[in-house]
Amino acid sequence: MRSYAGFVLDRSESLRFLGGILEGRSIKRDKVAGCRFPRSFLTTKTKVMTTSSLYHTQGIRGFKYEKTERVGLTEIYYLHSTTHSLSCPCCGSKSTTLVKTGKTRDIRGLCIGFKQTIMRVSTRRILCRDCGSSIQEPIDFTPAAYVGYTKWVVKFVLGLRSSMSIRDAARLTGLNWESVKNIEKKYLSKKYKTVRLGDVEYLGIDEVYLGKKLGYITVVRDLDTGAVLYIGKGKGGDSLKPFNNRIRRKAKRVKAVAIDMANSYSAWVAELLPDADIVYDHFHVIKLMNERMDGLRKSTMNKLADEQKKELKGKRFLILRNQENLSAEAAQELKKLRFEFKDLGTASIMKEYLRNIYRMADSEELARTAFMLWCEKAETSAIACLKQMAKTIRKRIEGLVSFWKHHRITSASQEGFNNKIGWLTRQAYGYKDQQYLHLKIYDLPNLKTRKYL
Ligand SMILES: [Zn+2]
Image 1 (tube, rainbow, N blue to C red):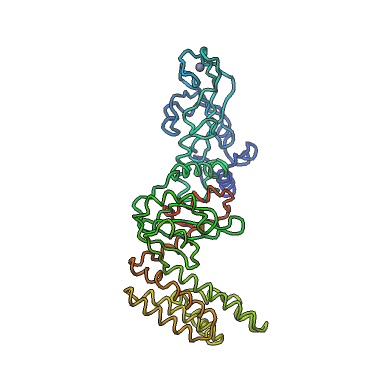
Image 2 (cartoon, rainbow, N blue to C red):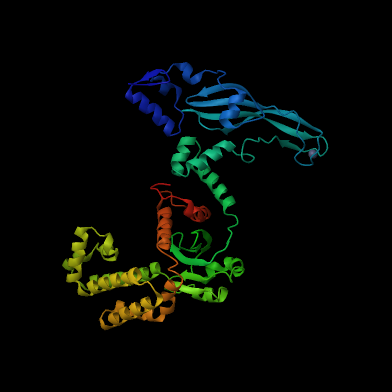
């Protein structure tokens, strides 16, 4: 047994009661009649609110409170404006008359305790004697004309969104999903209308795959601050065209640009930032190595008999994951796998070797020597993917050692950021609205990634 507001409820009653609130539906009178609520709790018209409390709980000023009506667990407050005269919104003339329309507008307010609230405002029209226009009187506690919620609801929703999903915020406030999304979208588009490049010195450019429907986007970041500077649709230099003029103004300042090994942005960098160094950072080198290794795993699997295929199937992550992140059991399994599939084993060890260069080398020269040794070793093996990798490393060696020249500009931040984007797109609601998704990516550096947001 639980008591709520003095009424004793048994377990099923209180669950029904709370469930109704959480799902944002107003419980019908007869349904609640089953609970031991007195009828007056849900239906009477009483004066429980005051004009002053409306100001303190809902931020509403300039309106007088008349009465309350209760429908289920929703309280409806009847209000009317106390403004006596308004100038004409069209011509600014003061010779206007305010005329009651006899109609009302419902505007959702903040919840009070378990109850949802609606402001039922009687509307008026402003008739202008000078220009003859007739316009509905604006309600100043809503964020814009014809919006069905108050300014304080907007503030509340924005606060909620840092710690809960759109769906949960909608449930709690009684708004629909779309409204919650639009509130946030509007706020974000104002916040990121102009992104300042500031004193950017190190740029990171990366393509991110968002799935079949959304395709690729290109994200430009300031590697010092982590801020997202630009998001372009598609990949390659063309996707950055709208960004060109802005970055040109900062061209003298930019010291280095970190890009991927596929070199899709090198022509863009050479054209717009001729003084900046191209850097192939740690994250992109290992990414390429992993891709090559996965190719080897697939081709090995194709050559095998069905019986052996089973052994290699589903082992993708075991092979690609960083060694130190494996459990003792998984490490043992990897050891076995390396022994059984010799080529794959060699490649896997060579990848760890490559990662060690980044861990151990503390100068440009040392790194260069280590890369060359790696290439020699890879070339003596008969494994095509390693030979290929060695070729790439030899070709791009300047960019690779630039990583040390620029004090290892990117640590794990690029990888972490890409993971965060992946996390964002995996959220239940998909992000059908591309513009909203882009705004959320701009906002990612400020966001703590929790499970559902
Ligand atoms: Zn007028």
